[in-house]
Length: 512
Image 1: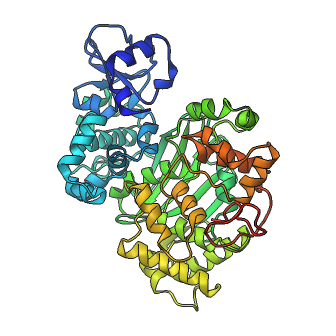
Image 2 (image 1 turned 90 degrees about the vertical axis):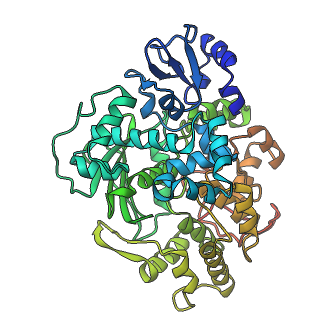
Image 3 (image 1 turned 135 degrees about the vertical axis):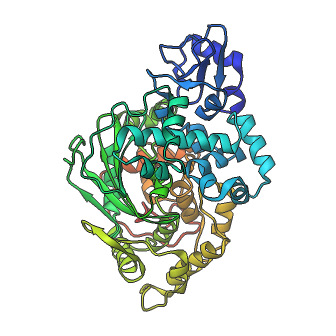
């Protein structure tokens, strides 16, 4: 949905009064008489009342002096899909703000990552998100503080540090001002978590295909950095539990994720509590928590060829990447080998080059090596065909020196062009990295063998995918799922590059 529509007051008013539910998550309704703002569709707000204004983000509402509604809790809602899917400057800036970039490097660092002047970034944010970078970052930080106040047992000083504040009393004041709630209401009693472990509830839009997502990640779990456990941890609904390590700005972390009634439970064990915002963002990206499953289902389910698949897999998500360097490397490692073979290769690299955790947790013992470490690795560690080893080290060198950037705010087209400039990386590999590392919801893989097989099964061809825009990444996942739990089997596929769909060794589902 274009930002111009989000900010068109009269069109929003007409749509909401007509009961259009598609605006939920895209538009926030602020009422001057109550001083509160709501999610679109909340029973507490009447879009026809005098003094009602429509805003594009909770940050804009907070900047205008409105507090969050207690009923629909717009401050707890996942981020708008507008920011996750778009490639314009404002959307890229919003993704970096959610990643904690302003707290780490300031507005100047945010602008540098976006390759734009700070004044231009702020102008784009005011136009499309309703507030400047500092204000939006402050509201985002307050919402994180509210989550910690309600869900954790951290003492005030630790809580303030985790949320990015220097004054231990500031989170309570800020949350009370922005969220219209008692900051200590519902705080759990002190529990067994250590001072560097935080328990969070991550909101998610339903439906949410947690079993399918964990199955996808578990089939590719690399020994040493990932594991899938049986369900049953405290507060979960008995579904499988996914655990992995992450490399964060100030140290390593271990994230344990489980599904509960209406949220994902996250236990984050961090070396530095100031990395909590970045850890939360990694979780949201990895699990695609900010997707709008109903909008995706409406679009894809309207096509008779996909309708049955969409009904059979409600809430299917696009798995993201907790570590772009790791995922991009694994995409290259997975070329020409089976899923099991790719896991073995990646596991050997982790054991030889990864940073060992000071305190392992279960079978999770290491953090994936940095691009600089991979760049310097020799053939004794990267035991694979010379051409693939050169691609791995070439990609690592490009990531290390900045020729390839895969951070949250990167221009996706520029990133794809930079990936294609690395010898050994072709269109399929670059597109797959774009889909998972860069969170692009509209990537299609026309030469993927699993996609080709599924298309033929339904009497379709690659041109038919054009009618699935802007959600072609999710169409790919539905097509893969139609081939069965293993995505059509344990096939081998060649290095990234243009591959004719009729070729004998056409690419298939990735091992990464």
